[in-house]
Amino acid sequence: MQGRNQNIVSLSEKLSAFKEKLQVRKKKLERGRTAAFPSMNEYLEEWNQIAISGLDIIKPILMDHLENLITEFDRYIPDRNEASQWWVTNPFLAMVDNLAEDVAGLQEEFIDLHHDQFHRQLFSSASLGEFWTPVKKEKPIIGNEALAFLLPFATTYLIAMTFCTLIS
Image (cartoon, rainbow, N blue to C red; front, side):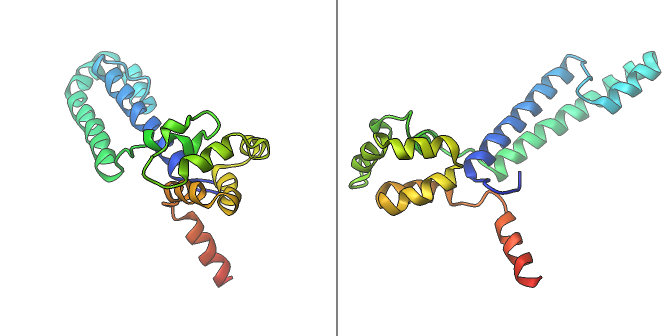
């Protein structure tokens, strides 16, 4: 999850996918399907009858562990309300009604941006950060709102890279 052009949106998407995969594995395990656990699956195939009763013994422990993982991810990294900020990730598909009305000038700048062919083309080829940074210069209200949403660093990657550059 670390690397260039990572932001809170891409991190949230990856974490949501990972949590869903944990749920799928838990459901498979409930049904006695162990293919998602290659080492355990290999062991069970090798030991046939003995392992089947062993699975019955460890299955509740594994299911509890998967549930605890899901709970801990939810506790430490809660889902953000991204529905209200959907326009940041899809400014040319969103509608003006998706934006907050309490920020003066936001909807007006959104309309200008929405009809700007240059920015539409830039959006199709740039990362979110590369897109919103120059937009902020021309349309400061909408640019500030978008960057405030994207700003929380998903990782310490940029800080670590800067530190490494300074000490080398």
